[in-house]
Amino acid sequence: MPVIAIAIVAANGVLGDGEKQPFEFAEDWARYKRVTMGHPMVMGRATHDAIGRWLPGRTTIVVTRDPARVDVPDDPRVDARVATSVDEALALGRDLDETVYVAGGGTVYAQAWDSLDELDLTEVRADAEGSVVFPSIDPAVWEEYRREPRGDFDFVGYRRRSPLPAAGQ
Ligand SMILES: NC(=O)c1ccc[n+]([C@@H]2O[C@H](COP(=O)([O-])OP(=O)(O)OC[C@H]3O[C@@H](n4cnc5c(N)ncnc54)[C@H](OP(=O)(O)O)[C@@H]3O)[C@@H](O)[C@H]2O)c1
Image 1: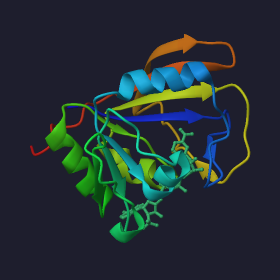
Image 2: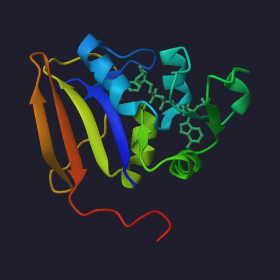
Image 3: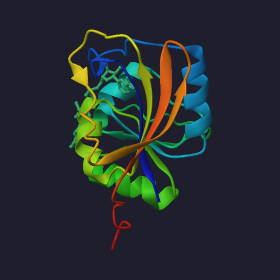
Image 4: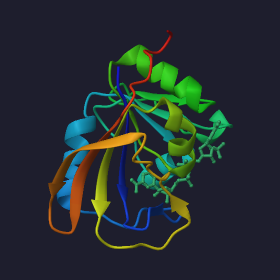
């Protein structure tokens, strides 16, 4: 039951400035869509606001302390959920699917960190400006098992060296 963080990260670890992310590459977005399609995605309310829409084909679980801030559409094509903690969102995701993606932002990656089995990162070769950063990746904990260079960025997979016990055990 993997819980996987997915992110595009600058060389200096920056994810964004709180409102938007610094990089957009068509190949990265296409891959993001392909790998997350059909799986639940957990994201903070700020990231949901930054995306600006409900992504089709995936259950989106938005974490907020104030559910009234999240505009859940009355649209059967959209599977929109709201959770009031990261743990609640992860539990909801696990109930829905074997694979759960954690889609950020900085506060949600940090709070989900100890529950993550894998990191699916797009590592950009340039720095960016912004105060929202990805947690640091300790090589004693995380094994890089895949790296696919793509010019300006690499698609990189990490997995936890000592697997977490299955949820509920
Ligand atoms: N580069 C990437 O791959 C990537 C991915 C995702 C996001 N980003 C960027 O990251 C930035 C947003 O990240 P962020 O760290 O500022 O915000 P965030 O993690 O997306 O969202 C923060 C919000 O989530 C809710 N939240 C967080 N922890 C909670 C908890 N324990 N219980 C209940 N609610 C909780 C709160 O919402 P309320 O205020 O509604 O209570 C909080 O204000 C943007 O710039 C975005 O573009 C980049």
